[in-house]
Length: 475
Image (cartoon, rainbow, N blue to C red; front, side, top):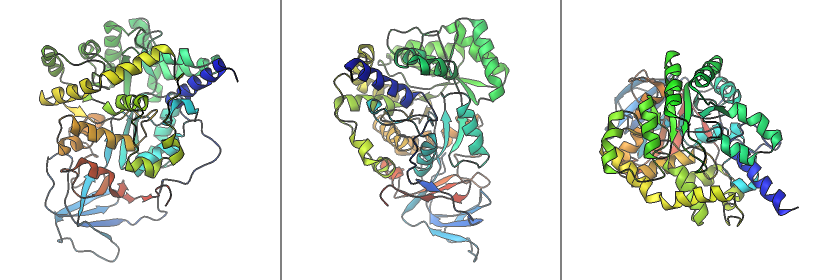
C-alpha cells in the first residue's frame, strides 16, 4: 500500500470516528447493560445520604421509595415500612445522586484512535452512557435523520439508552468547521453524503433562516452553530448570520447553542443571542477586562475541557485509562492510543493539536475565572477520539474540580443545573431528587461531595425507576 493511500485511509477513519453515526461491524460485543423483563414496581433505598442536585451538601440518611418510574416518597432513614412486594437496597456507605447529564454528548462517534479506522457503534455508545450513570444526553451535532430517529426510538422504549436531546446538523460558514474537516478528509463517495446531512453551510441571512425552517420537520431540541475555526485558517460564520439563526430558531420556540474557541467567538455568539457556549474558551486565556462582558451575557459555559486535554494527552503519550474506561472499553482499544503515528494528520491539524497542548493551563484558568465570576458552568464531554461516551463525563467532573469547582458544584453542573438548561425549565422533571421527579438515579460508594472520583464507583443505575443490570467487560 502506498504511503499516500495509507494516510488517506487514516483520515477517512477520522471522519468515520468523529462525524459518521450509525455504521457498525457485524460482530456484536456482549451488552454493557440490560433491562430486566419484569422490573419490580417498587424499590426502597434504605437509609442513604442524598445529594439532590441542587444543594451543596448531602442530606442525613433518607429512605427513598421508587414507584412507577417516579420518586414516590422521601423520608427519614428507617421510617418507611417495607412490604413483601418491595425490593429493598441498603444505602449504608453509599450516596444517592440524580442520574448524570452530559450537556455535550455525541452518540454517533467512535472513541478509538483516529488512525485505527474503527466504525462507530451508536447503540453501544448509548449503553456505555447508561452503564456510567449518564441518563440524559444533549447531542449537539449529528447526521439527520439518524440522530432524530435514535432519539425517538429511545423515547418510545424501543432502544435502551439515555434520554436524548438532539440538534442534528451543525450550522456553519461555507467551508467552515466542521465542513472543512469533511472536505479535507472524506473521499467523494462519503463527502457527497455527509456534508449536507451533518452541516448546514449558510452564506447569507436568507440562507440561514431557510435552513432553520428546513430542519423543523425533524423537531430538533436545539439548533447548533459553529463559531470557531478548525483548522485554524478556515472561515467563521458572521455575526449577522448567527443572529438570523438565533432569531429564526426563537420564532419557532427553539434555542441556539454555539461552538466557540476564542473570546471573540464567545462574544460574537453572545451578542447574537445564543443560549449557551458549547465549549469554553479553549484557544487562549480570557483577559480580565473581558470577564464583565462574558458575565453580562448571562449564558452558561459548557467547558468540555476533557476533549481538548484528550487530544493533548494522546499527542504527548500521557493517556491513562480510568476505572470506567476499563469496565466499558476493550483493552486492545485502550492500548492502541500509543504510539502516535509519525504521519498522524495533515500539517494544519497538527498545528491545531499543538495549540491544544500549549493552552492546557489556559483552559483550566478560564474555567476558574468564569466560575468565580458567577457564570454557570455545566458539564459536557464531547465524545470523540479518546473521549469515551460515559466515562468521559466523569473525567470532565474531575477536571472541573481541578479547575476550581468544589465536588458538589461539579455534581450540580452535571445534575440540577444541567437539567434546568437542557429542559429549559427551572423545575425540570429529571436531574433533581425530590418527590414526584423522574427516578433517574445512581447509587455510588462513599461521598462524592467530598471526593469527586467517587462518581466512578457506581453500585446501581436506575432509569425511569428501572434498576438496570450492569455488565462490566471481563465479568
